[in-house]
Image 1 (cartoon, rainbow, N blue to C red):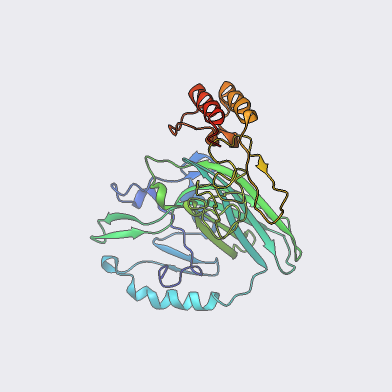
Image 2: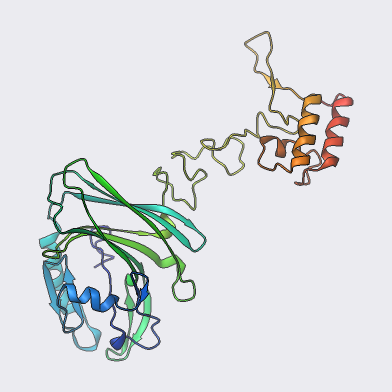
Length: 327
């Protein structure tokens, strides 16, 4: 059903260590930075006794499975629950964003409201899951594709907003356990849940490899400006850094020799300005080499030998070119 209803059906699996296949790698998840306890804590919210147990927004549930792991007979129940809930209105919207640096994930989860609703007992759950884990279940005698298995129940936060137009952001970070988890399948799931009746009012998920920090519709791992809105991804000099965040135009201004980025403007304003290379560029390049300032726009423009390593040889080469009238 998750494949049948992407975007509107989001699940989390909580596995009991006592009933988990030994070779499944379903290590019990961290619960508020403590190893273990997730299954019991989550199950207690819904008085889970027998398993398998499915809970639908805290409003409908079904306990028990079918012989040989055959869940098809349960589909009629599940689709009924889904159809009852899919039309439910909610005042909440959740946006998950952040930035992934190696195995460190920094997240921002923003909950906003488009209608008034009491904040009494309202909580925001933040859970890290791993999707699509194949394991062999002896009792069912078949492989099971476990979806969104809870790995780290980060926190349960108070939601304080109650009026249309208000928003609240929850920020934090966590480390991906590279040895136990598949980094490509790690997601953040966040939900607004009432701790009075345990109804879930909104839920959202996002794979941590699909963050879009600047909200321009281009994922971070493909975005040439992570923090600047640039949906068109313009890159005039083709250096991999988008024009929206690139101070150096290496195609038209900071070309080889024009270390300072100076332009010569003609008296005839109909003519386009041209680059100006002179002794001041030599002096500036010498300073860049002395300070090893690789962040300067002039660094790449000063690579006169084309070796990629700017040094005193480039300073000498630039001076020679100017003296020979090469510019």
